[in-house]
Image (cartoon, rainbow, N blue to C red; front, side):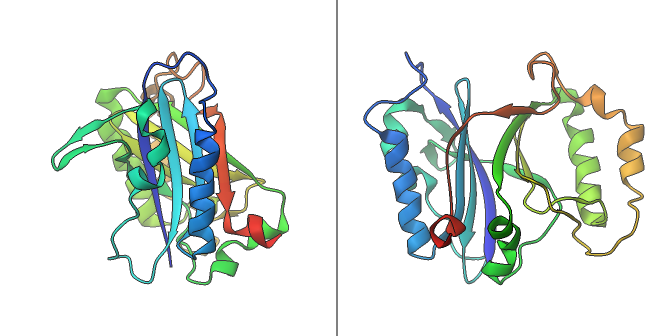
Length: 227
């Protein structure tokens, strides 16, 4: 089974965009090791200004299994990160709340990764800044779209929320599917369109975009070793 999750971290003030001592490469190697052990399917890490975002696909037998410790997986990065204060103590990678997707992963890993093995895929990360007063509206409408399960979009798309920030992961070229797996028009998407989607996004922070594509520091996938 595939369990997807996304995490956010905060970098300390850096004097250069490139981290020293091959830290990013060591973090990438750690996820490659987990892939070889059959514990991870995909790990993709992105950075925008002082913020970092991780998209993760874990391989689990049951969804009740404990989540991987991303802090431990990215341990070498910790000296360059600010801790997040949480109820049970500080952590460096804060879990984000999923609010949107178009597909539920199949239990068959080869079927889940079928498009990744047949097309040259670009794994894209984006951020969006939502006006705080518009957050309830954004979450309500996107929860309704997911629950209806008819709107088509990229099979691997996954959007999560932390504070008023959205992190979006998807892959190009896109393989558009929907959760229900039927070719039927979405009704609830019309409610989202009537709510004026443009009014939800702080385009000044997004440099003129609703969702801004951000640099990828590393991406590793199970199929990378297969091909």
